[in-house]
Image (cartoon, rainbow, N blue to C red):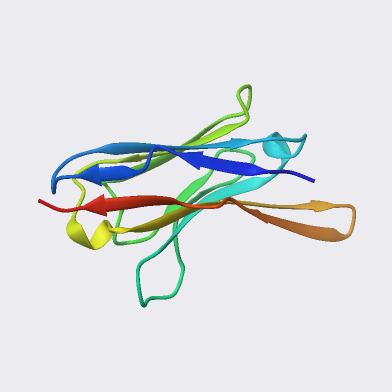
Length: 119
């Protein structure tokens, strides 16, 4: 069992920056792949960025060169540094953890944090 708690969302002007954090409880963090998803009103949830347990990263095309995903295994914390924010980045951002315990795949979600980009 694990819990994921996001923080760091808020209101920011276009061109601004925010850093989201996701703290994980339990013993899964260093062994699981982690990711950030987002869901805008009326749209499906989409993958923003992901990082494997080994540190390999991938990004959605819409955020490449603007967002950076990172993890601190010692602190059980996942980060998303968001720069050059645009109004279309407005969404609820969710932290995700995915991994296996033996043959069983586990998937965990945080409660989400709102990011609003507006002047």
